[in-house]
Structure formats: structure tokens, C-alpha cells
Length: 158
Image (cartoon, rainbow, N blue to C red; front, side):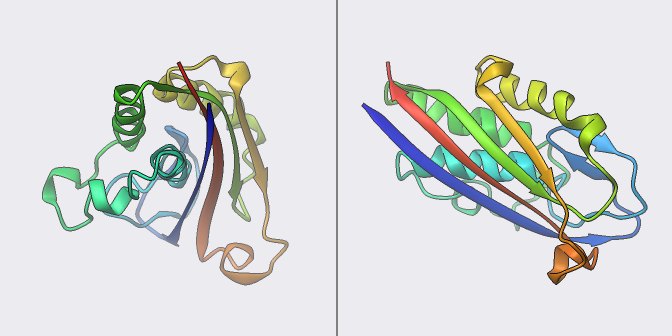
């Protein structure tokens, strides 16, 4: 049996915060604002995994008003979601994700992001796709006010 999950996340970009995407610190004059490390790729992936079995969303499991999660590394959210689906006898078959960010260019970091996401999802890197798109100077992404990620995950019954 197969199940599909979809996840999305968006964070404002501000000065004075690091930009962490897929567990990779990306050099940038702007970083993502958030309670944890604000890693939109890991957040979207965790939401997709949770959604695949209707287990709620990231905010339900990791409320942003809980001090335990302040500046937390977001890969642990993915690890937690994977643990929940494993308890129900599922594993991740593959994930396809998109990061929307006007700049900087992410191509040099994509393979590291894929490797980090693969480790968090407990799958091989060839089961992980990460793409980067700009906002073409349109909307909050294009105006460099936000970073967004979306992910679709396929899980399979073991």
C-alpha cells in the first residue's frame, strides 16, 4: 500500500539570522526568521511525512511557543515524523522538493541538502530530489522577503 503526503513551509527573510536549508548553512545577507532554525526544506519534508498518514502537521507536534524547540535543528522534526510512520509499518519511498528563493543561488548546495534529507528520512540519496527556483522578482519570494519550500513524499507499507 502506498500513501502520499504534501508539505509546505514559508518563513520571512530578515537580517541577522542564518539561512539554513536542508541542514546546510547557506551564505546570505538574509536568513529565515523562525522559532527553530527555520529550515523550510526540513519543515516541508516533515509536514509531508506527517501528512502521508494523516498524523497532523508540524505545528501540532512542535508548537512554536514551546521553548524546547527554540533554535532547534529541524532535521530532528523529520526524524520524529519518520519514527511515527515506522511505528505504523511504513517507510519513505521517495521525496521530491522545491525551494523558492530569489537569491543566493542554491545549485552549489543541492547535493549536500539531498544527503542531509536522505539521512533524516533514512533513505538513499537517489530517492531524494531537491530543486531550487527563483521568484522571478514576483511576490514575497521574488522580492526577497521570504523563502518557501514544498515537498511531496511517497511512503510504502513494509
